[in-house]
Image 1 (cartoon, rainbow, N blue to C red):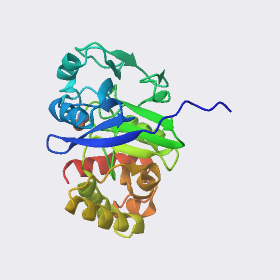
Image 2 (image 1 turned 180 degrees about the vertical axis):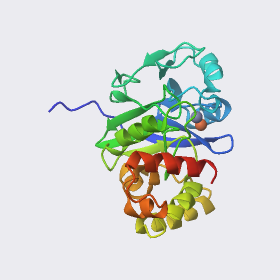
Image 3 (image 1 turned 90 degrees about the vertical axis):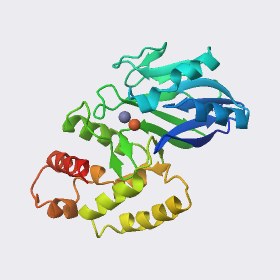
Image 4 (image 1 turned 90 degrees about the horizontal axis):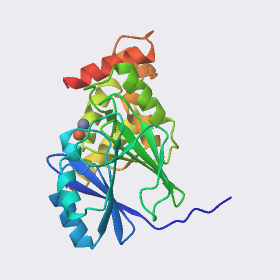
Amino acid sequence: MIEHMSHEIQIIPIPAFHDNYIWLIHDGQNAAVVDPGDALPVLNTLNTLNLHLEAILITHHHQDHIGGVDTLLAHFPHIKIYAPALEHYNFQHIAVRDCDQISVANWLNTVSVISLPGHTLGHVAFYLEQDKAHYLFCGDTLFGAGCGRLFEGMPVQMFDSLKKLASLPGDTLVFCAHEYTLHNINFALSLEPNNQALIERKQQTTRLIEQLKPSLPSTIRLERATNPFLRCHSDEIKTALQLKNAEDLEIFTKIRLLRNSY
Ligand code: ZN
Ligand code: FE
């Protein structure tokens, strides 16, 4: 087996706006950011940690994920920007599509692109395996105990996109772009009040939020156990909705609709 060149990497959340996280990946010298909706907090963090920005990864075209790109590009004219091929962007970028393997930086292993239509039609995630760990940057597709709204896609597209993510290794660390976890957990408990993993997650998440700490990253294993959008097969959910014999997709469609007004 070939050993990949591997560096110790660190991933830190940069809070932005009301509840966004811009995830910064670095090796102590160089950095990449995911979905920089705002440039100033990114520039401040790079400054404080004395890091050089090499790359930007974009999951989808919403302003709270791309608003800082132009300013960052002005500060670092040589950075590489990766953005979904199926969406339109006004800045220079490398267009990425499903199953692409991209060389973001020489201190990172190859990053895999996973296409995830639903929240937007071109939405992608970035998946990285390094130092025996797995990292998923999933934008507004998968949230802690929830999923993104269907702005452009059909329920079946989001349902299939989430199934792809659910099939990743259980220990995959999940870096979502918003802090919605506690509200999502409360909604999830309305469907599965007896789910022990969910009850425990609420206690842990409440503690984190009280300490002003992020509830993320999550793991795929935890999402499978607690996220109702990955649990459309659950008898407790089907019974709660009085849709005992419904297909999983029908359950998904129903709970996405209920969550819109929760
Ligand atoms: Zn979005
Ligand atoms: Fe967003």
